Structure formats: structure tokens, C-alpha cells
Image 1 (tube, rainbow, N blue to C red):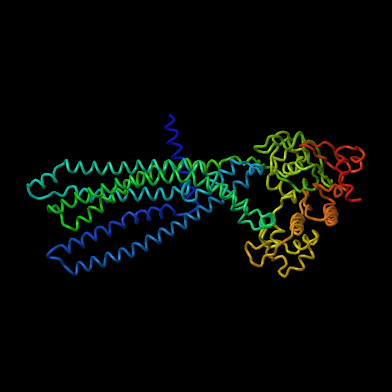
Image 2 (tube, rainbow, N blue to C red):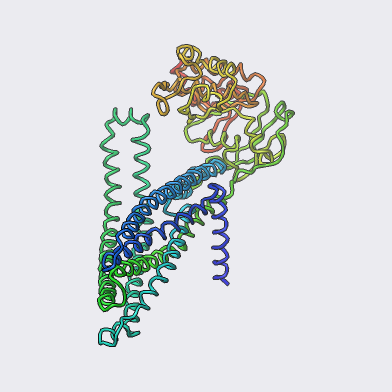
Length: 616
């Protein structure tokens, strides 16, 4: 029963993989089979024509014109066949490369659809990296070349068996001892036995080596991942160069890179030594069998079973047959083993998105008059030892300005992520006008918010695209958003204006932005969206207190009829808010106006007093 389920699963997975490949690259299987057929047939043209030329040359009644014709035909077939094989192979490579990029796209798209908190899950990130790192070798894409190898091997074996039967059936004329020995069925059985032994040993060594490589890959994957991470984060991201240079961190990075490389090399050396040993033994057995082939074929030719030219034909045919059988068995084994990698890919795509899509529309009436409520909400990040939020309950409505303050790690940003549905509550619920926010259409719900997070991202695109978060946008509105964010003077100094490239990733004329300028662009993006609710999560950390106060005053004007939440470590920037929520160890320990919290002489008062001396 279990075996039947496994077979049904294999066919189901294969069918899905075939449908996926056909959908991503139309005609890829037809091209694969044509390429395999050409690769299988091509060697025989050279073998058969060369054998015929040699036969003609060794014949007393040789026809020179016929020999020249065969030689010219061989040259033409070699040239045309090689070009045709190259064209089909490159065309197939292009199609496979396209599918590989589509796989990377689907992996990224799946990550975007999943709960934002899952991006911190190390197991999930490892799965994503493994899928991308497989490239052509494993997973869905590997099925293409595995099918090509299997079909090519089948064609090769079919042609070789037909020609080998002719060779084995060729009898030595006469009744002498040599004729009786070479024509005896035992000679044929001995030859076939050696042939089978050679193939079996080749398959055995290949299977052992492949298994050893797979086991080594699982052991060493963490070292290769760490090397890739170090390279990407430290060497390829030029913005990290400042700290590396000023703190002379290059040697530290290189030391860690060398340590990982040495660990990977030590683990790899053992498997490569094993591979060399197994390959050498397999090569020795194969060469001994080839020697037996040449001896058997040569003796038959010497004693008149066939012409001299047939020596070349039959030795080539037997070699091709052995290679075809080995290729077929290896490909079948790799094909079956690859199903576990195909399963990993589809299991990843089939993972639940966690973020409920919802169906209720976020109507204009809701945008104009909304109220959010947290009811006993708790949340713990994947792998974390303790909750980031514990039993949070509060309300806020349109037009209300809320400040969230507290020490680092007190849960303020997590509170915002839950409100914006980047994470889903694990306990309790968040309501919008009395309805669980998970019941609302996800995209429409996100349109309620304009946000600037403390870890905002400025992309290496044009300035206007960064503000509008799209390529086609209202230019006048983008300019106004930049001016309202305090970026007007810098914008006026840019000759290309909104078309100015930021950073130098895609343009040598790209402009570098300071930390404060980047924050202003992020705030301009928030203003451009003009959503019903504004969230500022420490967006002014790179600004001086005067500039920060100016930004908050501007934002207070822009959000007069909107709801807003401000997070800042500078409490002086939050005293104008209608209500202040004080977070401590994942809980709201105080809430009220600035004046009432000062009078309460609790945590807020202590935080205020600790900062007040800097503003006196």
C-alpha cells in the first residue's frame, strides 16, 4: 500500500513538474527530445562512414571517387551536425536559463506573499537558498537534462544493439581451431559476461560516488552558505565599505571567510579523494574491457569474419552500447533521486501564506471613519525565546495622533507590523470597525497605510520612482511630496530632477544620498501615497533635533484629518500627540497625554527626565 502511494506521488509530482516546465518555457520538451536524438545519432555517422572508408581503402578494387565522396560526406556531416548540435544545445540552454530565472522569481514571490515574520525563520531561508543554489543540477529544472539523457541513452542503446547483433552474428569461415573457438557460443557468452561486468562495476562506482557527494553536500552546505553571505554582505554591498575601512575590518572578514573555506575544503578533500579512487578503478576496469573488445573484434577480422573497416565500426558500436547503458542507468537513478528535490520545491510553493487574503472590501466609508482595536494581542517571532508583545489592548480612531514610546526591544515596531498585517496575531485579534482585519481584502487593507519604518529601503532607481514606488506616476505630486518632506533644496540642485538615478548600481551618474536625505525621500514616499493612516517608525533618527521637530510639525499638518502613529526615542517630538502609549517588555504599561503621564511619575516620566537635560 505504501509502495503504491509512493508511485502515485511520483507520477503526480512528475505531472506537475512537466506542466510547470511546459508553462514556463513552451516547447522545452520537444526541443529536449530533438537535442537528445541528434546527440545519440551523431556519433554513429562518423563511426559508420569512417568504417566504410577504411574498408574501401583496404579493398584491392577500391573506387577512388567513391572514397572521396564518402570523405566529403563525412566532413559535411561533421560540420553540419556539430553546428546543429551546438544550436540546439544553446537554444535549450537559453530556455532552461529562462526557467531558472522564473524559479527564482517564484521563490521570491512566494516569500513576499508569506507572513513577513517568516522571513526571519532560518529553516525557511535555508530552503530558499537551497532551491536557488540548485540551478540546473537538482529540482524541477534538472528534470529537463535528465529526460534528455534518458531518451538519448535509449536511442543509443537501440542503434548499438542492432549493430552489435550483426557483429556477434558474424561467423569466422572454415573449420579450423580458431573458427571453432571464435564461433562457439561460449565465446559470445564470455564476451557478454565481461561486458555486463564492466557495466555493473561502472554503475556501482557511479552510485557510490554520487551518494557520497550528496551526503557531503548536506554536511558542507552551511559553510558554503556562510561564504556566500560574507561575500554578498561585505564585499558586494559597497555601502558597508565605510565601516570596513574605518574599523579596518577587512582582516576579520577575510579570517572568517578563510575559516569557512578551510572547513569546506577539509570536508571536500575527503570526498574528492574517494571520487578519484573510485573513478580510477572504474576507468581501469573499463579499459581492460575495451582491450578485450579490440582483441575479440580483431581476431574475428583476422580470421575473415568481416573486413578491416568493420573493426572500427564494431569497436565503436560496443563502446557506444556500454556508454548508453551506463548513461541510462545513471540517468534513471538520478531521475528518481531528484524527486526529493522536486518535492522540496513544490512543498515550498505549497506552504500556507499565513496572511489571510480576506474577502471583505475596505470601502470608502471605512476610510473616512475607522477605528482600530487591539484585543489581548500577543505575538512571538519564529525561534524567539519570549513574546515580543504580551496581551496588548488599545483603541485609536481616525484623526487621533498616537505616540508609541519605550526602550529598545519593548515591542513598538512589532505593534506596527501587526497593525499593518505584516504579521498575524498568535493570540487575540485586531479589529477594524469591529471586524477582524484578517477578513478584509489584504491588498485593499494595505492601501489604508502610509508608512516609514526605521529600516526603510531606498532603491537604486530614479528619484521619482522611489517616491511613487512605481514607474508611471504623477510628477507634480512627487515634487510636492519631496518639498513637503524637506527635500526641496536638494531636488532643485539635481539637474535631472525626478529622473536622477540614486546610487551607482545601474548608472555611473547615480547620486549618493546622506542618511538624512534618504530619510526625507522615504517620508516623501509616505506623503505621496496619501493613505488614510500614517505610521512613522523612528523615521528621523538620522536628522538633527531641529530638522526632526520640523518634520513632525509638517506631518502633523499633513495628517490633520487622518490617524497617525509616531514612534520616536526623542520624547520631545511626541508631546503634541493626543495619546502616548508607553511600551515595556512587550506590554503597554502606561497610556495618556504628555501632561498626565508626566504627572503620573511612572516610566514615561523617568524616560522624559533622562532626556530633558539635553534640551534645557
